[in-house]
Image (cartoon, rainbow, N blue to C red; front, side, top):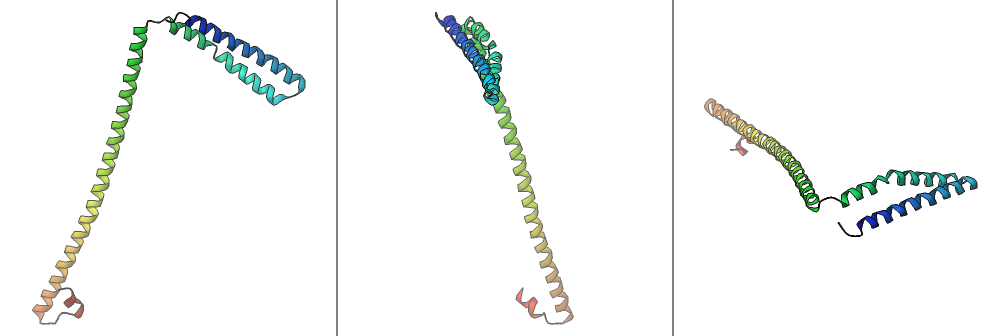
Length: 147
């Protein structure tokens, strides 16, 4: 703990309280002058200052803590944050991989389906040509172009 750390905290708290007093006076002046919007803002600021007053107790408690314990707490927090972010990243990457796999499989099915369709057409054409040839008919001009 720094030698003057407690003094610094007390000084900051005094400044906090003085600011709250000035805002109280300003609120009263605005009420007398009829400036309600500024009065409302001053009252809101006083409420915020009252809510954050507990911060000084926390600062005093933290200043008396063992530095080794504080360092361990910081390390644990950092490790927890890193672990959480890595799990989130792993989950995101896994989802993207599954999505890419599904997309690739869908494209493969479409491509393979088109190839199979083309092969069926070619077999039908050959079958028609063979039957016409066996029957002794000449192939049509369209069929001759596809040979």
